Length: 312
Image (cartoon, rainbow, N blue to C red):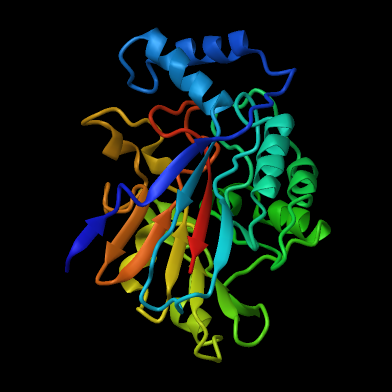
């Protein structure tokens, strides 16, 4: 099996910055200094930098893949919001609003939300209620709609609350389902997979609610398929019937220190699906670095990002 990773396939652009007036840079830097040791970083200065990167950086990362199963000339743009993890110190409600405003300015045909909507790490300084982050996401606009899947943190900590929050703002939640979008002749199937590690059974033991064959069985035409998954580890099982798989979960490693960062990648494949555009046997996967944080509110070398994918 040949594996190629396209480093030149994306362009990062700084997103307009409008940090919360209630979010103090001094407080964020202090948090970084205090957590530097926990993150395994060399020195408080790096920890402070990592805290600031998580709280204030925001980039738009552009991909233009050319999957074999995508019809030539059929243009589609997709904005991807992954791993929001709403909660202070780095993803307060004003920061969520900035993400929404930036995404809307991209003017994409479709917006997809790849799960993990609220912060669960032990260093949360401000809770963002489900109704608050969902209310901001409800402002997202796209001609083909806004569609969501759940992540493992949603399942582990409050799946009922997340379901209700999305339902209350009428954002459709996809779990082992597929829906056709667009008019005949330009139609695309959007498929959303259930989470692969929804239930924790013990140390490194999980049970998923994912059903890939059942999900793809809901596709009833030859139109191309976009598959939404939270964890990228399902990718070896994805058939070439799927034009493009979009994933989150890894945060790109989150703390990207040379020689150490693969330890931060929550995947049984290590760095193989950690981040970016991955092509295996002509099958295409894009893994977002996400927006929020897990375990510690720090990012280093993987700034918070909104992904924009342009097909055709």
